[in-house]
Length: 209
Image 1 (spheres, rainbow, N blue to C red):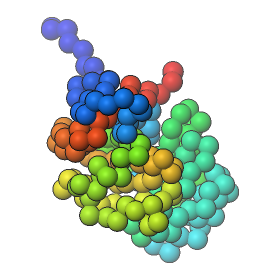
Image 2 (image 1 turned 45 degrees about the vertical axis):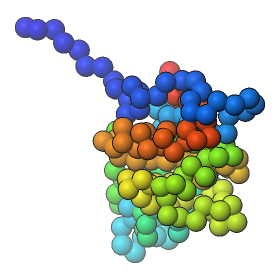
Image 3 (image 1 turned 120 degrees about the vertical axis):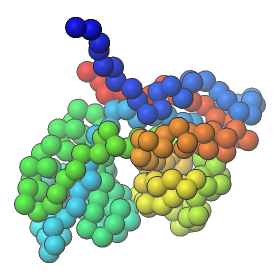
Image 4 (image 1 turned 180 degrees about the vertical axis):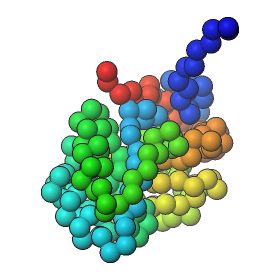
C-alpha cells in the first residue's frame, strides 16, 4: 500500500510572502497585512424567541453585552460580531478564547445553533493609515471614521466577495473573514489595491501549542 500523508494548507499560505511590497518609501509602511491562523470561528443562530435568554447566558459566561445590531464586542480573547438579526460570528483567539468558545456552546444548548466555520473562513487582519483607503476601492460602505469606528461591523461584498468586516481599533485595524475558496481572488485584489501605498506582509499569527 502506498504511504501518503496529509498536510495542513492554509488559505493564504502560498500567497503571502513576508516583507514590504508595492510602493517602497522610507518610514513606517502605511498598510500591514497578516493572516490569522490562530482563530476559531463559529456562526451562532438564535432560536426564535430566545434573544433575551441568549443575551443573558452570554453576559453571565463572558461579561459581554451581546450586540443586537451590526456591531462587535470583545474581551478575554472572544469577539462576538452581529452579522444579521439573531445571528452572530463568534471569533476566539488564543487558548483562553478557544476554551471560552466551547463553554459558550454548552451554555447556549437549546437556545441557539452553533456551526463551526473555522475551516470555511479565511481571516486577514489589515491595519495602518491607508487601510481604509484600500478597502474603499472595493467596498461600497462608508468607512469614514465618523461613521464606521472601533466596534462597527458589517457583512458586505468587498471586491464582489462576501466578507464579514469589523473594525478592531482606531489605527484603524480591520478583521476580514471571507470564504476560503475565494482567498486567492481576494488576495489578488487586495494586494493590487494596496500596492499604490505600499504594504507589509507580516508572519501569520499561529495558535500557540
